[in-house]
Image (cartoon, rainbow, N blue to C red):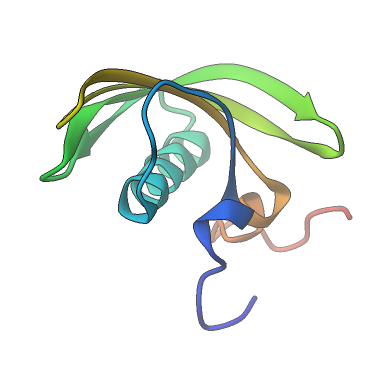
Length: 105
């Protein structure tokens, strides 16, 4: 893994979103989901100046073509109103986990 993190679009794959995602919000969704996945927890929070809400670990995996991974759902309150995002963590995201020593290709 390189010293710099990959861009957010390599870390999460958005399945459905009712709100446009800024890079800051996308990276926050990635970090919350990665934490939930690693701890096997159910719910995490988003607390940004532009968006607040919670992320739920659906405990399901999804495939979108050749991209697959654990699925999450965020219920958000943004400047534009309420929103929902369903997304998955990519293989690249899972490789950034501290416990990821060797993931299969």
